[in-house]
Image 1 (tube, rainbow, N blue to C red):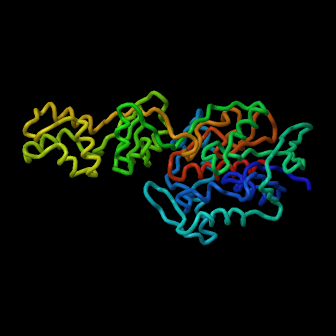
Image 2 (tube, rainbow, N blue to C red):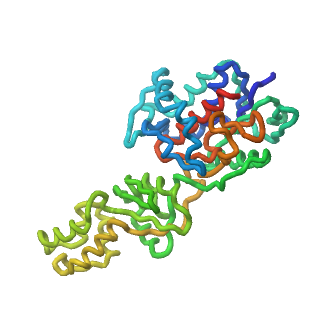
Image 3 (tube, rainbow, N blue to C red):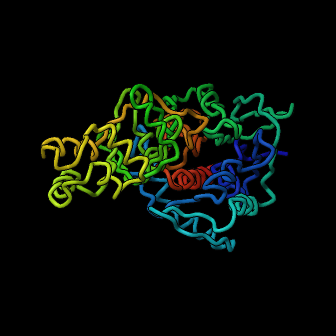
Length: 389
């Protein structure tokens, strides 16, 4: 069979691109080495798929070119995907910060995308790609010992995050083969690990609390979670995309509360209280105890000079941790970096140096915040490429 385009990768971006291109009467071959499509979709959102975010704006995406995502995101919005979901009768709900989840199962999203594909789309699953080449205006893809040809090729194989799901750096290797530059990939939306003196905080494993987390000028206010290896939770996952090795992060354990004022007022009103008892009013008991012990403010509030309480309060509002690393791709929800956007058209996702070669989704150097943003980039970039293949 002759194909108009071959799409490599049957994840979120690949499925959407195949469906949209197929609806334009393009003959599409969709290839994936996995035995079923949409594996990352199926595990996302605790199995309910956080399929988009109603607050999607380009400013909530990281890229060497922060303007690159504007075109695709502007032409395929969260409302467009919501309309598709609604059209299939898939019920959903909104959680915090604009995050939209299926009421039922992530399988509904995969089933919807497959249903969107007309007969002109062929799936080839469960066989590895052994070679990809380009000559005489056509791409040749060898899969299962058979060579398939098409004038257009779409790279939609994602990044190396969550390797247990079959994720690899295939997209980058292929891009380099075709001369496309790669922005150094690294794990993103990933737990941070602690070493040195901070290792003692691992004893709080399982304790979570509302926090305000800072790295440089970037701030997120959500929950943080102590783990047996370091720090996790939504605020930490968010800040991890901005953190670089060697940098410190600051955690405000009393977000929205001026700890200095609280301590001084408490000293006047409850002189026999301790720092620990004051913290118990605002934090989980285990965390309050550990922080109070680290502050080394012993005795009652009345025993302390105001200056000492203010010093302790400042630390509570900006407690510095220096992570020694991350938990890597195994625990990263996405990959930061990837195929350099400078090598692609922001309107069509086509490579500037090789006609009819496209790259979409996580394979590209566009990474969203936690909470459905990366799925929205997958849908939007796929729709952009589908209009051009």
